[in-house]
Image (cartoon, rainbow, N blue to C red; front, side, top):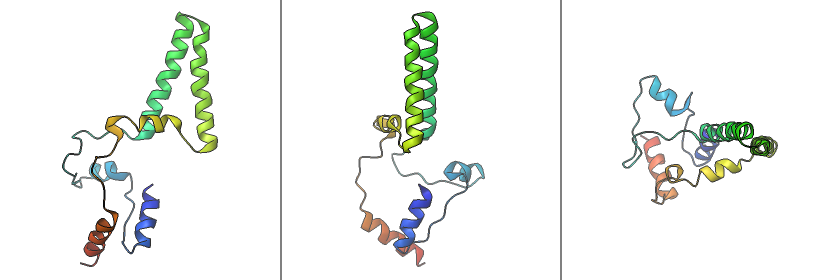
Length: 127
């Protein structure tokens, strides 16, 4: 995503760079981060990490319930496996779409004025 954002900014005349390791890598190397007001004190897990946690938990739950209650519960694990294969083949992720609707995964409610933001970035690039 950051490479795509850099390309879009370059098309608008704004220089931008990818951070090796993302903002986590930047902070781990001792650099500061300025977070907007109202940003969560604890960063939310990356979406792919959330998907791995939920998918793995569902697979384990299906296997456990299949052993303890009824083998039909193993279909839950098979369903998750099928969803992961479908996700890889189509480069989509339904689970990420669902997780993205959770309150802590939604961005702030304020609208972004893209033209004003680009103008401020261009002004900063000219200094």
